[in-house]
Length: 353
Image (tube, rainbow, N blue to C red; front, side, top):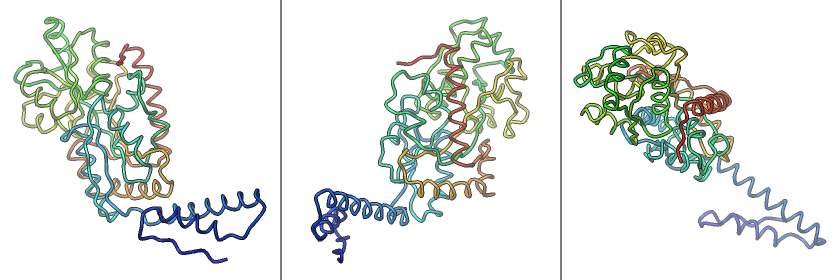
């Protein structure tokens, strides 16, 4: 029996091909016919899916950034996109979908078609959101599959240099306690790393500082420089130029180790906040049902880019430490940090409807 050729010039040709092939089969008993037809249909569709992954990508790939342009997530996405589009031979588009502490962008990708054309620049914020938000329409661990890590970026406590005279964490704590209700800090949104760091900072110092959530680092930095808020715990990348220009003063980094971008700035642990170790990592994820072949291709291409001298140099310029790594390593990190932040969120009593 010969099968009719697929009409590849029109939409829906695969279904017509399968139906034509079934019609051309010789008569069989009902049960046998049903089983044979099902097997034939599955085989043809499986073959088509395999062919599709072999030719992927055939059109532009989109990296979804769950924050506005100008922040660390956006900078990392664009640095990766510049190299990845060369590797894939297709344009790589960076698209911002900010809001709700980075959960709107994650939800969008989790519900996107799992074909490898829509990817998420995920971050530590998403492991925190799993505990902070009572109602999420997606499961970060089940509905998204990790591809690879991009970088780890320390957070840094900065103050407006002109509006805040303090030059150390101890001086800042004393000032805040002496003037209760006057001080505020900004974050990238409710349930983000900056929010949790600020809450943890208050708990360990016995201070009360008003939390002001923003949609991202860009608008937050504008208000910090303008004096509308007095401090932030943002990642180093967006505030580093302002620190170098003397407009913002870096008092401490939030990770256990000092940052190579700010080697003279102490850690919060060195400033007396024992056990303080929270940084912001970034990774690439895809919808959970994305073909394994596509995920493997993306992992191989991205790891090669992230480990390249050019990319590492770019990361050094913005205060980031490139990571890369396997899918399994990122998945384990997400599991570990989801559990870790669940404990911190509970202890800090942070909850958002």
